[in-house]
Image (cartoon, rainbow, N blue to C red):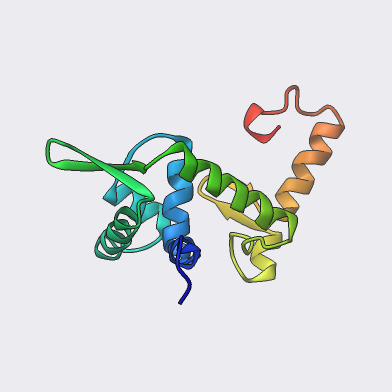
Length: 143
């Protein structure tokens, strides 16, 4: 075995999808609780707790206790810079996540979501109405 820094250990911590989601959720700079991070990672609280322990033990996370809660954050700006570099590299080499939403193509094409139209047909309808001037202003959240 070679001596020196163990990049495989860091790679293993980053390589798990749930842990990657936890780390990316913390890139915004706001400390989050284990429950919030479990939801971001799409795992149970118990599973998230295990991942948080591994990330903390690996030096990627810091934890601060406030009352009954523990708030997790990235341990340093160095970790944030690493994540940003890996995200950029993944985008450049085409390593992108699967598209969110229903797997059924018919549902992707036309569906409703709560109280509004959704799916590809809804997007086409919106763009057409906007292009015709039927909508006075494009919502900022869609710009």
